[in-house]
Amino acid sequence: MENGFDLCSPAFVRELMARYGVSFRHEFGQNFLINRAIPERIARAAVGDSDDACVLEIGPGIGTMTRELSRLANTVLAVEIDASLIPVLEYTLSDCENVTVLNRDFMKCPLDELTRSAFGGREYRVCANLPYYITTPIIMKLLEESDGRLRSVTVMVQTEVAARLTAAPGTADYGAITAAVAYYGRAKRLFAVSPGSFMPAPKVTSTVVSIEIYSPEERPVRPIDEETMFRVISSAFGQRRKTLPNAISAGFPEISKSDAADILASLGYDPRVRGEALAVPDFARIADAISERRGQAAV
Ligand code: SAM
Image 1 (cartoon, helix red, strand yellow):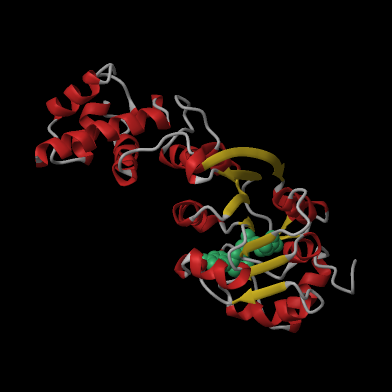
Image 2 (tube, rainbow, N blue to C red; image 1 turned 90 degrees about the vertical axis):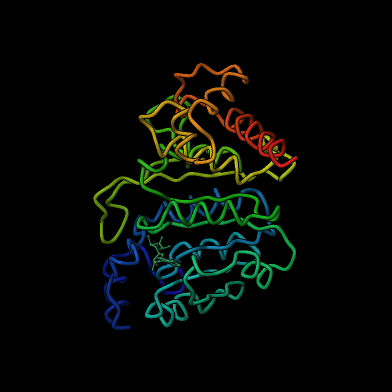
C-alpha cells in the first residue's frame, strides 16, 4: 500500500466508492483490477525500458494502473468517460503530478488533438484495461488514426479477442481485425489474467496483448489505395462462406463475379480460394489490381 491508497483491496475499493457515492457501471464495462501483481506488470510491458515515456491510458477507472504508469512513465494522459469517477481520480491520483485526467469519451476524441496537447510532438504509447463492450472499435480507432508518433498499444482484452488479434492466416480465429492489425503492427500475446483479478469478476478470462506499431515505411505492404485494400479485407470476411470472387463482387458492386474471377486468376489465385486463407500482402495485391483496373476504366 502506498500513501494510503490500497486500490487492490476490495474492502478499500468498496469504501472509496461508497464515500464518493459511485457504483460499478456495467454499461461502461467497469471491471477494476484488484490483483496486486497485474497493474504493474501491464504498465511495465507498456513502458518498456524507456525512462521518459508518454502514455495515454483509456479508462483509468479508479486509477489503479494509472498510479503504476505515473511511477514508470514521464507523462500520463488518462481519458475516462464516467464523470462520476473524476472526483475519485482527483483523490487517488492527488500525489501523481505527471498525470492529467480528462473526462471524455475516447471514441469521440480525435487522437491527434488529444495527444498533441498532452505530449506535444513526442512519441507515445497506449496502455489500457479495455472495456469489453467496445474493444475492437477502440483498437481500430487507434490504428487508423496513428500517425507515426504512436509506438505501441498494450491492452487487456477478452482472451477470445486476443486470439483474433494474433491469429495466423487460415486459422478459425483469423478475421478482418487480424489482417488490419497485421498491416499496422506486430501483435503479440503477453499473459492471461483470471476473472478473480477483477472487481466485479467478469465471466471471461482476459489476456494482455501488445501491438508494436510500424512506422508507415515499415508496414508490410504499400497498397496504391489503403481504402480499397480495407474494402477487399472486409468483403472477404464479411462473406465468409462465399468464395473470394463472389465475396469481392458483393463488396464491390461495380465488379461482376466473372470480372472478380478474372482479376484473381490474373494474379494466380485459385478461384475457389477463401478470404481466410490470405495474408495482408495478398489483400494488397488484389486491391492494387482493382485500383489499376479502375484507373484504366477512367482513361
Ligand atoms: N483501468 C481500470 C482498471 O484496470 O482497474 C479500469 C478498467 S475498466 C475494464 C474500463 C474503464 O474504461 C472504466 O473505467 C470505464 O468507465 C472506462 N470507459 C469505458 N468506455 C470508455 C470510453 N468510451 N472512453 C473512455 N473511457 C471509457
